[in-house]
Length: 447
Image 1 (cartoon, rainbow, N blue to C red):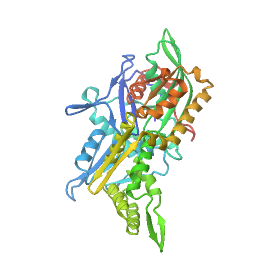
Image 2: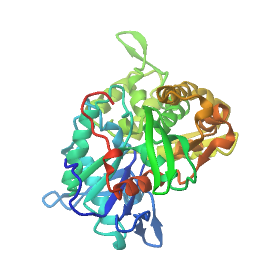
Image 3: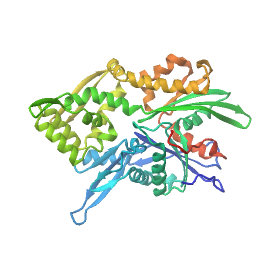
Image 4: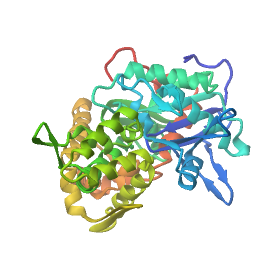
């Protein structure tokens, strides 16, 4: 994919394609410092955030049947209105660097990751407000410092992104680490030199960047000092809630009889079930047959039968909504009730913030270790970090914020535009005379 600088200044689209949400903004080098958000009119509502989700369905008779697709809020609306026959996918960004993910079947067609992303981008562009359409063909896109997954392959992720953006019509693409873009946006308001730790919490990854900003007569200059990341973020916290609250009601911990012996139901089904990206592709004949055999031999088949129902009927989104509502409520209150109902499935459990923080304790330690490594790599002491900028939805989780307040003090912590800062920063980087200082491209398997 082309990375050369354009012969003449061109408007740039800054795209923060996220695991949970996607945001975009425009910048024109002829209007320095200005950012125009990409919005999405939807009747009486205008969205500034576009949900990273797809919904596929078929229309017509057997001879004229064709597959339709929607993305973002429109995907959610269609699925909620017509769940039967829908194939709803969310958090698919998590597959970008996974060599084990080849494709997923959607109404008889195999969709690779790059097919899903290009389809998403096309619908994203189609729904953009008329005043910003057509979107610029020059793109600055964010990428995590560390890709999600057990054994991520950054080169594979980059190749898949390249193919998807090319298929979607972009003719010039540049990649920037997401926390660097957030830092660029944050720095626009600086009045004096500062060393900033930027913590970007997405749905799939948490990334950290330390940047030294110097303020001169010709503007703000940045000097990146270090970057680290870890494949744990909002979706990982959701996993803990599902694993502890939902999965035990759907057969986790139950037993089945095989050759006269009682055995535990294999936990790998629930490990997949509790991850939004994996849940979206569990709807295969093989998986459902295996679960059906286990349910038939189970000591109490009710939970497994309901698990099959959740998978067969693509209930990932309503389950996500229930879990996310609890997680959000626990940022404000000491306890919240998780409510998930569908036909004969009725799950109502009170979740205490203290318990939730216990469940995510190991995740928090990995987050702490990652940003501490960034400080070590930068060769800095804690007191040399002037500001800490937290961005991304998971930065609202009190236990996450405390990691930084305990280390640096509340006075040095700043937040703002948690869902918008990366896209705005990407767009502004695209308006720079020389963006090569900010861009990154994989040349080896190391992230």
